Image (cartoon, rainbow over all chains, first blue to last red; front, side, top):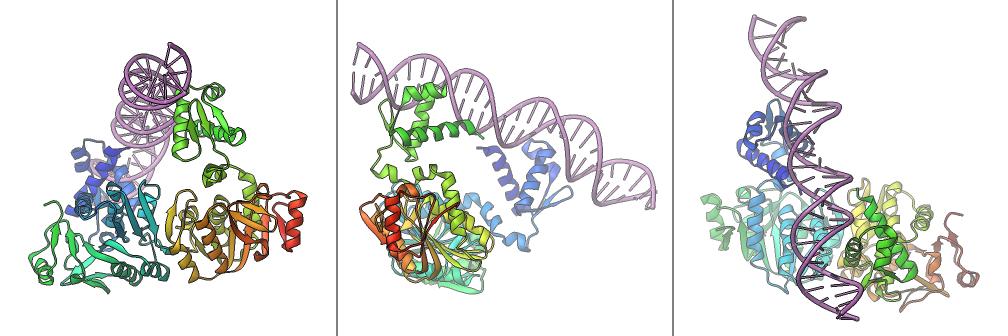
Length: 256
Length: 256
DNA sequence: TTAATCAACATGAATTTTGTGATTTTGTGA
DNA sequence: TCACAAAATCACAAAATTCATGTTGATTAA
């Protein structure tokens, strides 16, 4: 596997997320490769929609569609996601029945569930289904539904109804927005699937990136009090933290 | 692309399907490669579930689960399958809701449904789900269920229940065995999924390879009279044909 | 005790990634 | 508008990496 190349691109994205813009020459220097190589990196990353090339470097166009694009979220915080997945895994014991919802964070966690086999995994996340299909000692229950390319998962009445007939020990629910004592999501169908999952699980764990604190979206997903635990990757701002404390939920900062 | 290697493995499977068993030394000789290479071929094929390694070679364990494994059938009859898929496509009109069940024949048909878009496709076949996920103008409804690696699809109560809430214009049902006026299948869970699908469809079409006539299996899948049409790839033996005629079903020989 | 299996390492072909220099495009200031 | 330098692009060669295969020798099963 071309680890080197991917690592470099990941690093470019990390720099970009932090600095908003990068300089081509500086990158070539920093990684000890030719400018041409950086050119190709930027071309491919632009092609994939991660950044915008400008003369002499690249920018991320914060505030516009770029920053909020799910593909950036997939690249961003690779490390943070790993830490969160690890913290989430701690809650899983062999033999359990676990639910995993849509989202790239959930996909990562789903894939690493093999470590805790034997398990029964219930999910509407297409990435998880693919990854666990042939995993030994994992009983995979896919929730059907209408395929939604935007969220790479299955949703709709079929999904919700399937969930009404199932029961799990633990559900991992992720959210892109959390403000005050509530979690939010921009899509109606996704909210319904997540809520159905929460109803079907004994215990619910919320996964949320710390940058998502203080944001909201069109639909309320749930009150934080409905969760048994919240896992995030870094301490949120004090005022956000105060809100979760008020809700009385254990907030786990992964990697501490 | 390592064409060479895949060709050799394909050839090994062909020999195996024909002879029931192959000798390792003979294979090394025949293909002009070392025994170690054949060992690796057999290991990987066994891993994939295509064969069973025995001392000095490999067998296919006809009559047991191996012969019925979807992956073996996937290797056979490539051409015949294409013709059947084409014949089946004739019955599909844009705008319809179509159901596709498990099996490699169904997988091929499912993938070619893109030609008739816009369509709504309902399936428990993992191969079809993968292929149609990002197909434009196809609304894909996956039936969830427990993933079964042997049939590369989803089965169980979740599947059946989802089907009880859906309705389609047309269902394509495939069978590995057909004798007299009945179709058969070796697996209970698969039979239930297929039957649920038949109940949910306005019209039902049976897909069956001509070599499958005159065979039976543990479970009855359906009476032929329950189908509106039967598609096969070549004329079956006269006595088998007589039985279908008696059931009064139109038998389409694909490619005529 | 014989043959088969398996693990570990070596080899060479094929693919992928990178670098170089020539050529074209773009931005800037006269 | 023009000239010109910096940046971008292109095409091809070089380097690195991956992958299938072979070899050897230890281990295991018949």
